[in-house]
Image (cartoon, rainbow, N blue to C red; front, side):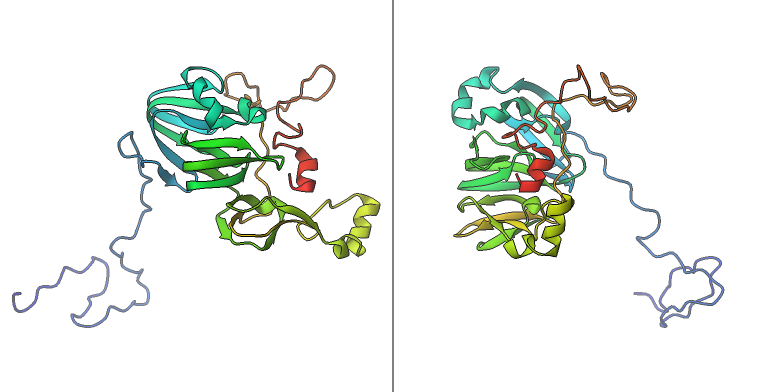
Length: 304
């Protein structure tokens, strides 16, 4: 080091700072620029090589490194790189594997199989996405929250309406309304906050009769307003295992998958005018149909 020490030039327009003394803000002068601060950083621009391998791009998007078949819920793929083909469940070369991988006929129309090589980007209306690994386990998840899973897992229809069960070893991707928390039984959970449960018995219904027959319960019975709440009705878990709950008592907004909505600029869509219900208008598929996981207000009331 040379002597006397050389100090970097002072910023023009700022008072001279004495070497060896901490810099002080001078009245009447704006603060000097700090290294590393200033204009916000530009968002990263990805390509097929820079996208993560079977990991989150950000909290709201997930990148799948496709090298073979992969099960996807309709409407969850937002973009892809490479040579990728999509087939409906029960069609194409993957049909032979359905007997051991996809055993939920009520949900078959909501799913497709992606085949080929490339990168898939998955998202679901800016909800939080996470991937989970099962090792010789079983996990039951709300059907609307499950986005994708590897074919090494077997999907079965849960005995609880609106839920699906994954069995085996492999990775799956699920959405939630806020971050997911993992808790152990025994516990009672608001049905609208429940995402799923792993390696534990199916829950039973628990009703707080004191709350139901109190002042608020009486008003609800007289007026029909308010519906069921987490204080009145819960899912009760006992035994060993893990329960997954989201950071919100609001279920993810319902959306009939695989349907082109009336939106301006969307092929097959309109100009943002919602369709009118009436004579001759068909109902959107899988909406308010028992057993399909989209039970509308009735399902919300009973946590299905």
